[in-house]
Length: 364
Image: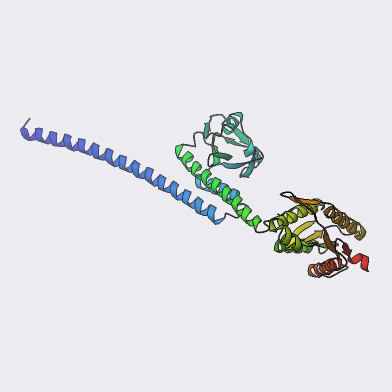
């Protein structure tokens, strides 16, 4: 064999080795690119869910909407979201009927310990007969807890018909989604609190004037066909300005809070109470078919206020209130007319010596 042949063989061997190394590097780069692409896709999906959550924060169907997104992104057979209520996990969203809520003993064990888990089985974990008559067999299940700053509030349970469907990438993604759901729930609670705060008087904890009108007007619209009778009571605390001037505004606040709480406790289901302004309280009486009966109820409230004692920092005082009582449809054709009638009767009670109930039905 000549020298040229040896050189050729050496060069060929070197080339083959170089080719193998290069192909290996290309393969590694390709795998890295695929992983990076998957990571970017996962990140993109998480960002999409985050944007979606923020866009529909006030929507009551937010959790079912997130549930649908998870199904669409991951292509799972079932997705069920549980939220903790009164120390029990309650299904808040699912795409598979009651069958998806069936949890095996193994699942319950993990869930009791608030653990992330994956269960794979050649045998069916569960069969969902609600989906199709022949039944869908579930062979792969993943569970991820939902937490707000380490406080457990729920679970996401994913099902698939294929064995070994779920892997680490799914777990990372679902963990990220569980964080989004936790944030959504927390923000939703804050949103509702802010929304409710706008409806309630911050001092005495009953509806404000604006909310009262909204609630009653909607109620009247719903019951218009039945022409339901109702009553309006206007209440004003007697000599309240004197209380504020002599005993201070803090004592005045205590008077308002205690008296309103007392009155509120005397109302029936369906009655609505609100602060009309200053020391004035307005009440909608839902059942006013029997005018004498309504008057007797209001008189009992007046007496309860009269015999109550307000105490703060060693100071005690008796408080009285004046009441104006009007009825629909006897005293007006709409809510405003009934309120105006009750307001006029209230001031009649004031001018008649205070601590009285004056009703339109007794004047007719």
